[in-house]
Length: 171
Image 1 (tube, one colour):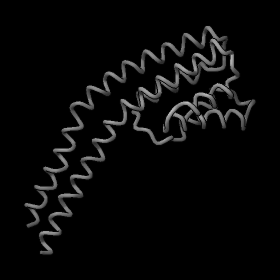
Image 2 (image 1 turned 60 degrees about the horizontal axis):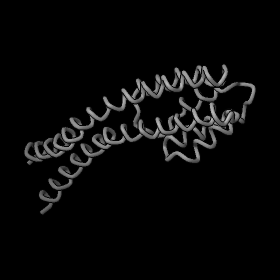
Image 3 (image 1 turned 90 degrees about the horizontal axis):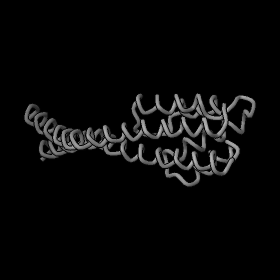
Image 4 (image 1 turned 30 degrees about the horizontal axis):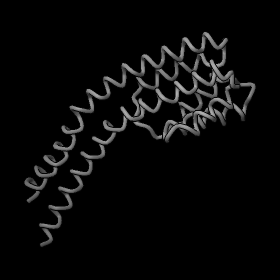
């Protein structure tokens, strides 16, 4: 009975590990969609509302689900804490403090490039940079969805298969 319980635990643990890795592939497209939505809201706040940047970031944070909303809230709080530092530095600090999302380095590079342009020029120039970032994030989202379709099933089966192989090796 102990061997059967041990085998079941090994199989369950390996299956859960595969499911955890698969979940990261599932969450990335959702995070990219939420990020695109948040940037579109920020674009509206900057261009049409002429809202000051800390208030615009706060409004976007309140309307965006976590973890993307936490990122915008962190950027707003950093900007309010050090108003002389500027939007770019607050954006970088918020990006360096991981909000718990499943984004890759390429995704974060788009955000880092955008952060260098926010708050430094007029609304028309910021609109141009925001639209460019939105286009890049759409491309990355399409790639993430293609990866998700392949990798989610792969990691789930790999976790269960590795667990079964480990059980066979051990017993």
